[in-house]
Image 1 (tube, rainbow, N blue to C red):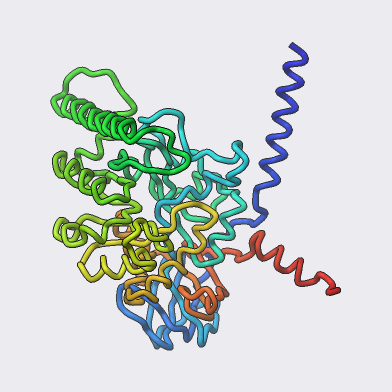
Image 2 (cartoon, rainbow, N blue to C red):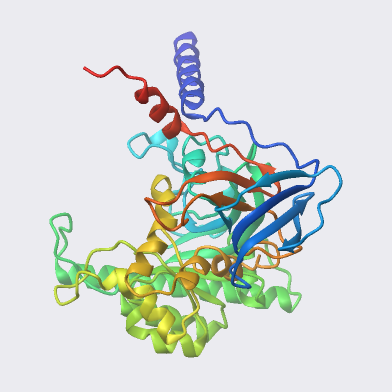
Length: 433
């Protein structure tokens, strides 16, 4: 017994030491206590175009004035940003920021539950606001992130977090916004890691699809029984899915192949779900249909390689432009955690392959806010909205020109320091040979 306690104690001490080692040291910003005026910059409002040589005033975490001749409130801090650019905070969708830390260390990964069906799982409960990765993400103007669980079928529910909190309660913006489903595969693959025959794969694919259809049918039966005031036992799984049927939650379907996308669309129309396609690599193949049905797409392969032998090298690079041309309502994401920092540059890459620059900026700011239902407070520079914004000496979408000088989340000044900047400063001082 004593040996067991000693072992458990040693493991606990080791875990605590490890957690402190991966926690960042940046203190969250203080609540805004005086008005701030950003004076003389170029404002990329997203909602109302680009305003040159303009001022922006925010107070108590909200934007209060925008224009070229605004009055300066008493006691305001005036910051001259002449020649610099102001952008709304970038919103990253489809991330596991705060859920994953080091891929090779199992104890730092908490994005996936055991089993195939657990819609009741809420991602924000596992969110680590002290993640060492978060400051590196903020450094590129990302202020908010949709944190979504991973899974093989019904993964759980995502939440929107801001990236400057003491804990998950402090960082939570909106909880349990929608149910995430990984749509079953509709094709067979021939790779070194797939040991099953084509027939075995087809059978497994159909079994997974049938399992998912049963999940929807059971959840609908539970919802109908509740609506009819029947006496039923509480089931947390189906409780989490009732919002899909009354329209208070969206169904986020992670799928890439055209056949998967079409199956998801058909099923959503059958049940009346509000559908958002995540990843959606083949969305360009059914762009007209998506536009006609007004189905939102969160395109998640901005730097993807060709999926088929007959596709051009730039198929994924140019897909956002094709979606825009067809009139699809879309956002751009960079799924993952540490590499999410490249999201603004992914939008810039889409500009290089035909997407309008203002559409690209909207695809990582206002469009994500609209898709998640928070556009009344986030996504653009407008009076009354949250003062979540960045100031850069160059184009936010340009990996060479971008250089942030200020970052604010709800009016709080957020540090731009991170493990990356610390290492940069350290090795700048290394003596040359």
